[in-house]
Length: 271
Length: 295
Image (cartoon, rainbow over all chains, first blue to last red; front, side):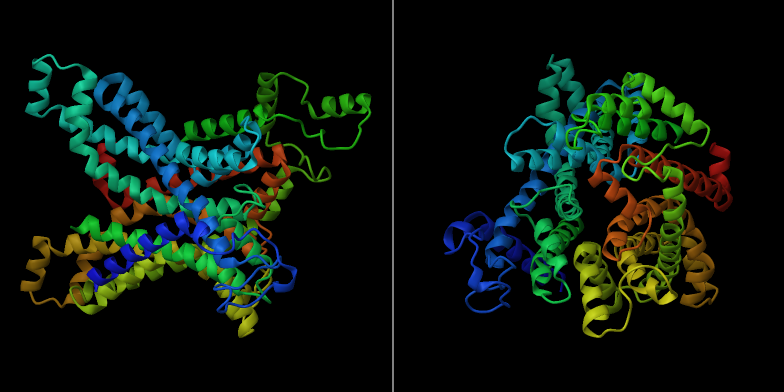
């Protein structure tokens, strides 16, 4: 059962990735054109997921929104990875007082409920960033605010592993042979912890996707007319009682995506 | 812990301070004199440091200031009004999670290596990925509109609690079951379990009398993070179910740029968590005397 679920999840994510990257070019409608004659159609042959209150094709909009949601998921976790790796690497390498102070700071940040920080950070960044394009501004502030509040556990794991690997004979040998610090870190320490770290980074992706939809839903993330899964859910929420399909399809895709990530990660971790 | 609170308050305050535009910018064509008087009244013309110290001095006396968008209400009043609903909702959810997780995790370990455990594992993963953005509207539509069984907004009667609590507990419950199950499984392989088996105690007896007690410590230390995740989940649930609580206030404050209310609520959440975490520390020491010796 586990194996078939795993296979299904991989296939689903693969199809989703392909569809969100190439779909908006392949299908006839972009999901942006409005059509007054076709508003609020139910799901059917012509419009796979139906149409919204402005007559836009929901299927195309889900694909279009998926681009933004997935980008936030990926970029946010890569940023968190970079931050955590640098911070944890420095702390683990230097040990002593520096290490203690750095880790203490990490603990302090970890005790703060991340939702509060993400929302306050995201709100301020959107108003502070100097980009003209509103989409760039919301995308960057979402990624940065999520990364800025989720790098701590990565930093902790990195520090622990650096401390451990540093004591191994092959690192001592490299030091004795006169290898520079950056050489030892990149060539000897990093490859030995990359596997564990990559799993942690991948685990961050579904969390980020959920954060994006949540922030856009409450009005702090992406703003219309741009679209993301959060925006689609927000739009569908307004007409829940009479046109439930408008919220069903985007949120179902959101759920299936996050679920697939969890199934795959659970499977990989057990291996 | 106190350090977290200070960092949180300072971060929030300076981030909001750094924002361009002031609270009086959006009003149409204010007389400069009026604007100056307004700024003076709210104290926003002082230096940032002056504002922080002034604010902290006031907070130390229990005065969180007045809401900037609802000038007839103080922040403390708004918090006092919202806190009842939020605490009731989260309290009930916490009780449901704790009891539910115990029953399901013990059942999973009792029937380990059978289809029951495999099923529970997969359902837990599915529930872990179920966002309340999907689950909440689905419940509202099915129970509220389609079958017309349960009320879907406000918290005025016990029936009103059913759907929000269901939405709120789903993910924390799943993660707690996973944690408790792992911890029970680990203990189940210990030598003392074999001894107990040899003495002829049944599987249920071993689980409940021996293993459960030893799995209590990792479980208790998870209650702190559990409450944090409940409170975070509560933001969305309160918005979905129109619960007049702290979460709804926080989100509308963010959208309205009500600085005093944002900082006040942030501080309140921070202190609430400090109290909860200290309580759990005490409980942990009671449950495991070894921790007391270490400290």
